[in-house]
Length: 145
Image (cartoon, rainbow, N blue to C red; front, side):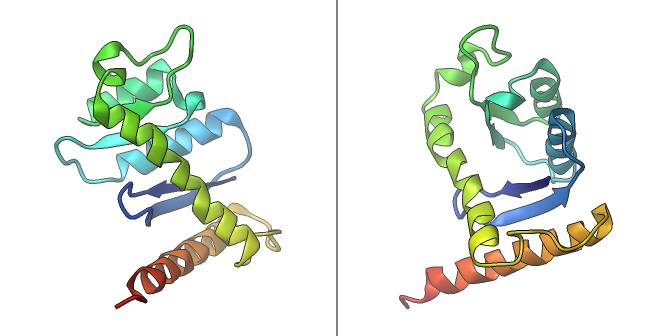
């Protein structure tokens, strides 16, 4: 499975990794990507409902980040302090942009079907595709100048 961490405003890929398939692996990868980031005040982390777990929310808060996780209808780990803000609403709309790199990598680039075996080789392909996506996005965003 490929995982990316994107910046909300530009949708540029900040970091990427690959893991073996599995829900807990996805959570661990998300937390590992978050742990590698520099700590700045008022950072938010957008994530889908699968990440609405006590562990994920606690790690985000321990790093000084506000978890803007899509809240489950029942027994959510996110409380009203977070879900009641305007920033949370914006994050819920923007967080869907994290899927754009995967669509591009599968349609335009080389991740439609992986040709390599092993995490290290697939990580190399994921990182190269991530950089190619960022370069393409930068070129397209400045082409109107």
